[in-house]
Amino acid sequence: MGNAGNITGWITFFIGLYAVAAGIGELRRPGFWARMVQEFRESSALQFLAGFVTLAIGATIYLVNPWNPADPLSILITVLGAWIFVEGALILAMGDRFLAFAGKLMGNGNRVWAGFSIALGLATLFAALVRLQMG
Image (tube, rainbow, N blue to C red; front, side, top):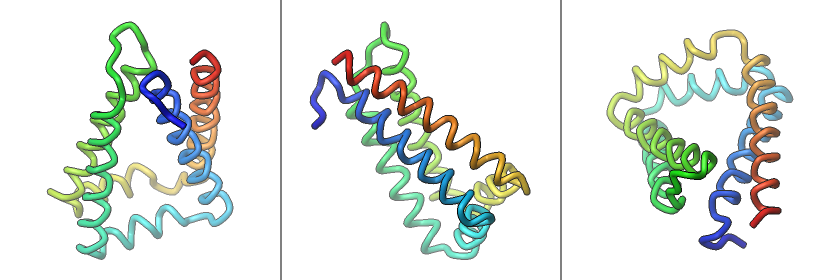
């Protein structure tokens, strides 16, 4: 269970699990991410819901993660929380444009993005486990 001393490690751990699971999901069902973005682009309700949830998760990470200028992982997680918040705000404010950009960014290389997501997730999990072992 998380406490003030290891919250950065736990946030990092769950972000890593998310990245690995998302990557595996795309590899298991190629085109899953592209279909998801397309469905979000076509539904105002999904855009609003996704924007709200993304904004709330980003704000929570930003507010809960302790800021420590001497700790690079703490800085990274705080900045990531801020970015997730901004992403949620962009989806709420201009979901159609933001999701069109996301679709173009992904392009046809979803297997590459999925592999990148898994690799980044594994690296994140490693960083989290090192942090949690130290704390």
